[in-house]
Image (cartoon, rainbow, N blue to C red; front, side):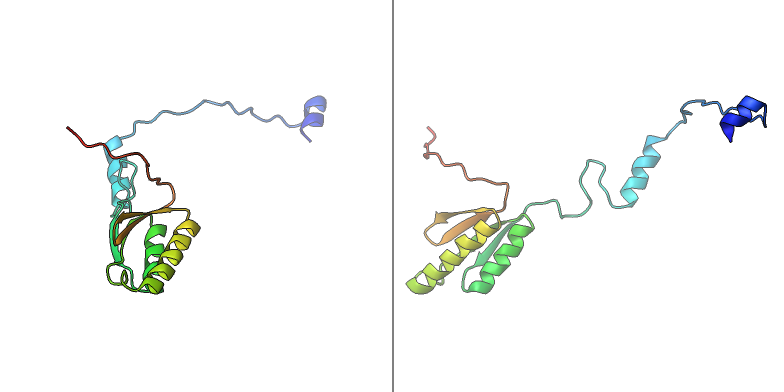
Length: 137
């Protein structure tokens, strides 16, 4: 009963003295090599190719291609949809473009036409800058 023991002369305990933080020598090279062995790049990136942004070309022929594009957008890759095979079939072309724009909107990305038969879809966090083209002199 700490308080009553002190008051009535009970058992005396030694007081703990806080000595502060003990400084030790740390070899930075050993720490870096240990981190690299675990697969982490010391520059802040995780090891491997998962930090690269890829531009994936996908031929737009059916809904399956739109689902493949959704998977790439979720991996934060850019997707170029090539619609040259369906551009002459107006009904299919219109249906797939509606599905494409809906899918990109659901993924919080953006899609723009970059050629007569090509569309570029970007994942969330990327925006297209709309400004007039200026020819360099």
